Length: 324
Image (cartoon, rainbow, N blue to C red; front, side, top):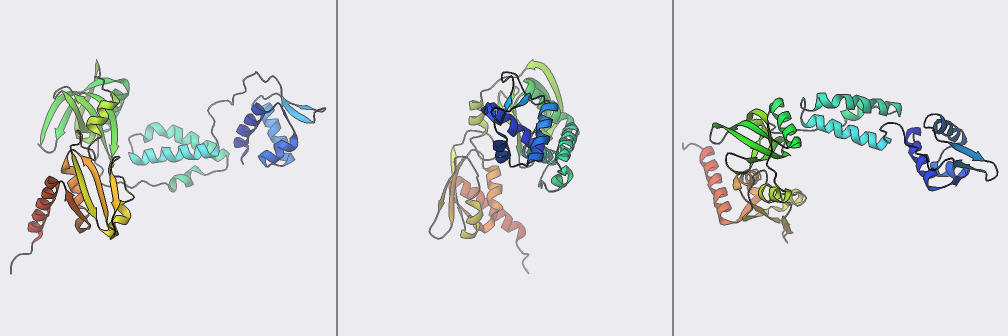
């Protein structure tokens, strides 16, 4: 145990007991007498602990127990430092250039603290890797403005590009929450143009200006019902239940996955796996079904099965060999 960590242990022990023998401290902290002497000096000289030795009791006591003996500054144990540095590195990997510049001073400070404990922060960050697939580039200025407006509860005027309709609209929104989903950022917001709660892809927002007006507030319950009851990123209250049957081989992976918080799974006698869950919009779900190819069959509802059949037929026609 590093001396830095033992400071916490000493603090806890002296708060629990009024009189502590040296042997108890050596045994509890698993340290030598020489280490104990160095620790005692540091506790007294650096952290201002008024620890005295009582010859009659043959024990150490903390004088003035009512005094506040808080450790100076914000301090962490080795495990806490490692966790913080790992999380910080993952955030930077999550969106390089987005939060990196703001987090760099913290990363340098954490690295210095770890170095004082004999740990190499650089070696640690090399062992943490985030792999991205299908991540779309977004405008840093827009993301920062949306994040600020979300936290400060302000309305935002945006220009939003709708890829499906190939059109751009000006609208005012009240951001409710930012969502990171499948390597991309989205904002759930009340749209004052449509007068309803909608989901916007942040990379599709080409202009963003924070307004002085307060954002329209929605309860977390309402947001959850509208935006999170369906499947994937698409909002809307779920009115359908998908029923998918995966092959025995593919079932080994799928049965360990969460497709929806309310999903129901059944392992069949032949080793196949039946998965059922609610959804509101089939577009993203259809794409996920198709990526499994012949390893999944849509059992219901009929509308989803028919959509899958049409997509398979279109693919078959597209890749059909030319007649000789």
